[in-house]
Length: 571
Ligand code: FAD
Ligand code: SIN
Image (cartoon, rainbow, N blue to C red; front, side, top):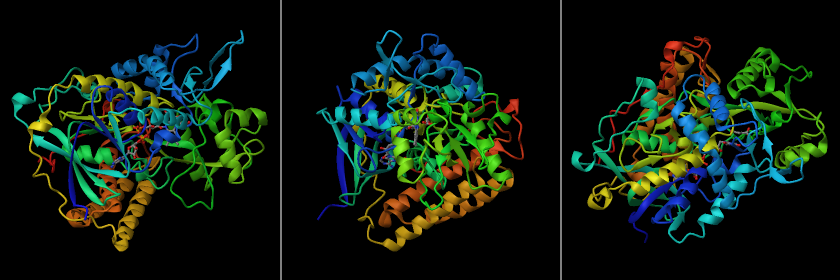
């Protein structure tokens, strides 16, 4: 019979196999024993579904500086300049790295007939700057990286592994002299600041093995959270279901700070299919608007020029809020996106995946306007890290959408997210290789026994209850903490979440944990953090729009940082 508990060792444990986790694992496995865990099967994560592409300044008149300026302008006063410069300056090298991994991007011919990368245009960018693989950039990248990863002997990939919690242990100050300075701290305190020295370090993680139905206790020199964002906290999202904020919840429970969770991006244009009750919405890339698609009401009337001089190419917060206002004002279930004025062959050639998907559902992009709605898309906030992806707990890193580096500020400009994954994974790889300590091998983790019985995978009834609570939570977040919120909505959401927290706290995870309950626990933790952050920010800025505080307040040009003083898993 399979034991309830198994012990495992590795040098670096990477949790999450999206763009951030896969690229980091590939870079580290040159010299380290790397174990890469993911919840489901490959390929998964938001990365695989990325459409538009990666922002890289390649045009002769463009520059990394111009890219940085556009990023900062869209970020509504909260981007950290140092991080923006670092990421935009690193774009070219990461593009070269991806090409070396075998990723093929869409090409065109220059005026002399030589091939060059085709650059698409997206909102907020002053230039054509988006390198892409047709309209399925994420799939092209992930397929190439997975093929590379599978060839590396030092790299073990384990699927159906659900990370539950981090294992952190108290450490003596002398063995842990790391000082932590995050860009978020610098922005908020007007200069370099040092967060108090950590009292503990991360030495591993507890993982639920869904194949064997047991818990694995992993000891590791370094743990990396690359678990993606939290958009599935909302009822409608562009992300796959894995985006339930697990890494943010795990980091928070271990004692990490979180920042800027009120800034969740809603993508303006997702296909609306009335009969489709699924929570996942299919994205219609912003690059469609980059090629001239416009937004309209059922009668053909366009409305975006009333909201922004760049009309359909305004930053995403403006476009999503405009659509929301139109839908509310006219009591509509959706508005329309129209690119049918462009040549049909052009549309099919540039957007083959989207054209085929829409056609399959009965919408012909080449001939008609298609119904669209906004949906939750990207988590700008997350675990506070420094510019190397390190959190304030030695031995613990967080990269990709799970982290808040200071790049996106109050609103992420299109196609900077994949870029951040690659730039930060390169930086983190260097930092991890230089990480001197192996506290894990010297630390006893045998007492870390949170789960001592076989996991309950049979009780459908218990799973059903967890799913019902998940649905209720997602509806609350959608209705009360959506594109537009106010104090009474936020209070209503907080009350509901408090009740759910009691239910989750009362649930006996040591004897009855299953994926649905573990997911619910994470959703509740992160939703509470989002609501707390949204309540604190009494202004409208970037992605956070409050109908009771509709103006920006320049006194609030700082990050919302929450600190967990409870830290239940101290070891
Ligand atoms: P993900 O790719 O989401 O990967 C997360 C990984 O963590 C997965 O492997 C998941 O299984 C795993 N995981 C999560 N929780 C656990 C757990 N508890 N235990 C074990 N494993 C876990 N950005 C751009 O820059 N350009 C684009 O064109 C673009 N288009 C997009 C289109 C869509 C439809 C979506 C949804 C997003 C898009 N984005 C785009 C955003 C971008 O794709 C993501 O921000 C980025 O890919 C996140 O990468 P990641 O590696 O951090 O996380
Ligand atoms: C899109 O293709 O519209 C998504 C791009 C992004 O989220 O960066």
